[in-house]
Length: 136
Image (cartoon, rainbow, N blue to C red; front, side, top):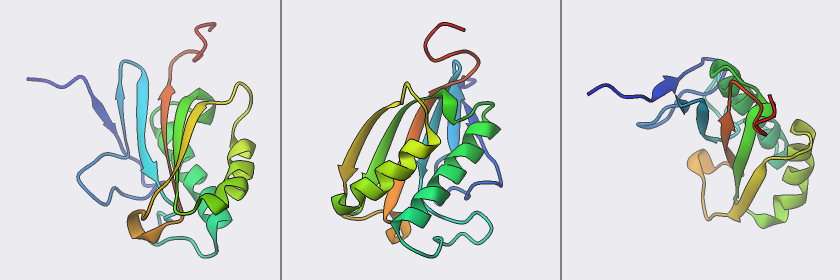
């Protein structure tokens, strides 16, 4: 039986470190796997703290979205996973710099541990091919 789900893959974002795709696309919807602050050229977390990791997360998400034929402007929802809710304000400030109104829906949760001991992970769901508001 043929799948109606296509995998997205780009060398501009870290390779999947498990049995999953960087993103999948079905019916114009893009489901981006969670990204942590891994440098795609080394496979290692970027140096520095949560700010540097958050910026790298967004570069990775942008690369995956572009490979899927979209951009961060197409994102309808994100989930932000933080190793410490004490980093919320720092991550939130950087998050806000990558989106414009209307901002995507979002959930933010503190977790006990993330892959590679990252400080932040973000996943995204987007609609590509037309405006997420049904106006285009």
